[in-house]
Amino acid sequence: MFWTGELIARNAPVRRRVAPAPWEEPHIGKGVAAYLGLAIGDALGATVEFLTPNEIRHQHGVHREITGGGWLRLKAGKVTDDTTMSLALGESILASGGVDAKAAADAFNAWMRAKPVDIGNTVRRNLITYRQTGNPEAPASEHDAGNGAAMRTLPVALACYGQPPEKTILASRAQAHVTHHNEISDAACETLIFMVQDFLAGRDAAEVKRERADELVRRHPIFAYEKKRSENPSGYVVDTIHAVFQSLFDTNSFEDCMIDVVNRGGDADTTGAIVGMLAGARYGLEAIPKRWQKALEAATLAACEQQAMALLELARR
Image (cartoon, rainbow, N blue to C red; front, top):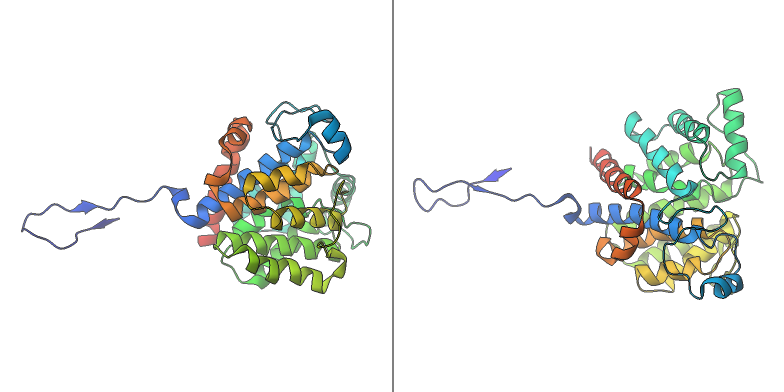
């Protein structure tokens, strides 16, 4: 794009406007930070997944570095299903030009056939059912309230940024119901998506807490999180949200938030991933420690950056 400005002389040269780097646009930079935060939280938390807080203190003191290991015996910087399922979903959204249940189901099915490092029982069961029926919507089940759909909400949040909330809710359920067709899971997924979008738009954390987190508790009191400290959270989405909201709202920096949540143990890769996407969107790229960015596997870091920008461009179009 060019501009001429006010000509001082007849032959004054045309001056080029220097376009900002993509992530200098605030919401794009925060979108990239959200995706990097998801992957960093996943990699950081995987080391201590399924440990109790006491076990973490005994083995690590305060766990604060991406070192790999854990029950999956990962190399440092490797991620788990939280990140790889999100990337698979994002690829399907970009290929389809929007969130499509069948495309998401096919992407998840291909992801499972590639033998991921980890896969949840509910995800596995309902993807096997999809192979048998061809129906991308799993049967509604009160037992499918795990966090497996919530952990992969970020591509929907980015692809639907600026879109009407009704469209965003339909998109959320299209991807979630492939594996988790459950009212409690839906409520958590939709709240997380709107929180990410609020932070991308620069909204204050106190507003987001009041209008999203506290509203979730009003509609579903089971999510009430301002009680005792949540430690050793399970894969039940309610336990996950308790830990995530406490860490997000009781800390004041990306790093403190991440360290707080993973040292609670339990399903730490998923609480880390979800807190990471929220804190990344809240605090932005500059707040993410460089040592964590460097520790993340280079291919994963690049995929997250590229997909975040592509999904936000899709939303703009």
